[in-house]
Every structure is written in structure tokens, then in C-alpha cells.
Length: 332
Ligand code: ZN
Picture 1 (cartoon, rainbow, N blue to C red):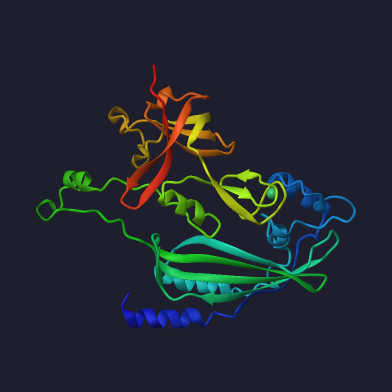
Picture 2 (cartoon, rainbow, N blue to C red):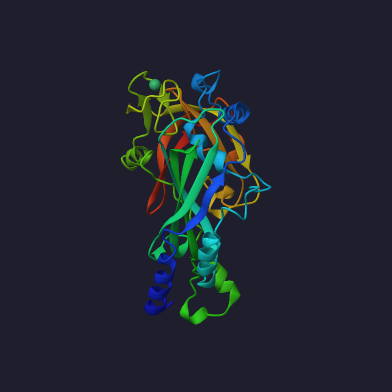
């Protein structure tokens, strides 16, 4: 797209900022104990605050109270404006036909309790300038939903998507071989492993990996170790933590062997014969007690066994990615 067309598209997209997408919509059900119970069972959350006669709803259920379910909201057609659909169609027309949800932020202002009637309004809060990501080029759209309980603002839910035109697959073709399919195939670079998603909750883990240290989070209040990295302690709820460095010893707690379909980016075995074959994915229990999913190297995939002692090492996958893996001891 030329710069002028781009500017004009962005101006038209910006005009949707502040547009209401849903006004005075009503939650399908009031806040209620059965939905809270099902949620807690699905999440494995046994916090006593969510049970009993003075129960509150888990704060992260905020959006659940606004969902219409498979059949949609019975109030559809009254509260909804169609602005989001128009914005979406505008982006489709500009070639941004793909969509991916990128993140969500919630803010809680008061607890929700069984019996609360939920109403909500949603607005297109912002449309970003044109951005290029690994997926492609497009615009981030942030929608903000204000959720009220019995008319009082109880929380906000921001939801962001990227509407984008997928990046063209690059095929390297040498000058003299243009047009010959065989050469095209052999010149394709090996597919690269997906990049880890590094965010503020796990950045410390990847900083450790860069220094060849496997860091385990430790609750600063009750000393419970946790892995993978999380913002809070599952045992006591504390948000305070520090880290301990894993000594590097572990055992295979469980494993699976991936046979099919073959995925070239995951040929992890260092045995040449396995280059295009199956590979083992292991759940390794570290000596410190936490478990992590990784690969076992140094043995063929079919020699990985539960209970096998393994030792941490760092595998350089490509020029920008290193991963902790586990090497099996010498086999008899
Ligand atoms: Zn704790």
C-alpha cells in the first residue's frame, strides 16, 4: 500500500475510536453460584472466598458474566451498534483479513456476588497505527468493556486483537534457478522453532537462560517453589518472590513420543538417523521438586524411559534461540 493510501486508511480507522459497540447490554444471567462453582472446578481454584453464603465470584470471571453463550444475547439488536463489524470490514477490504487475539487486561473495582445483575457497555478504545509483526502487517484494535453490577461500575475488561495481512512466505530462489520447482524446495531454509513468548511475568526466566542458569521461582512468603513462572504463589497467593537456581539434576517423570506429523522445526535429536523421525518430549522432575517440559537429548527417542536420570544443558537452536534441554546419561 502506498503511504498516501495508508494515511487515508488510518484516518478512516481512527474515526472508529470512541465508537460504542454495545450499549447497556444485560448479562445473560445474574452472578450465580453454579457458574462460579463450574468455573472454580475448571480452573482448579479452591479458594474458600468463592464458596458459601457470603461467596464472591472469582475476579477473573469478569468477562464470563457478559458472554451470550453459543446462542448469543437475547438482547442482540438493541445494544449492539455494528461499529466493530464495520471497522472489521474496512480492514478486510484493505487486505487485513486475518485476526489474532493478542492480550487482555482487567481491572477490578468491586467484588461480584451472587444475585448481582450485570450490565455492560463496550467501546472501541483505540486503533493503532500500522504495525508489522512476525505474523504480518496490520492494526491493533483495543476494545474496552465497562461492567456494572446493579448499576455500579465493577470492573473493566480491555481486549486487544491484531487484524493483519499475513506476511508473505519468503522462498529463496537463486538467480539461475528461478522457476525450477526442485531447486526452490532445496533452497528453502529449515523451518525455525516457534519463538518463546516472553512477557513481564516470565522475562526473568529467559534472562536466566541467556546466562545458562535455570531459575525457579520461590515464594518470598511461604518458600514454595513454582515452575513455570507465574505472577503469584499457588500455595499462599503471595505476589512476592525470588529465585533459586536449579542444580541441573533431574529425572524423566513422564514423556511422550511425537510420531506424526513430522515437523522439521522439531527434529531435536542429535542422532543423525532421527533427523526426520519421531522425537521425545519429556516432563522432567528437577532435583528441587518442580517439573518442566523439555527435550531429552543424547539418546534415541525410543530409549527415553520414566525414571531416567538426566542433566541440564543449554541447546543453541539457532542464532537467536537457546533452550534448556536434558541430556541422558550414557546408556548400557
Ligand atoms: Zn507462597
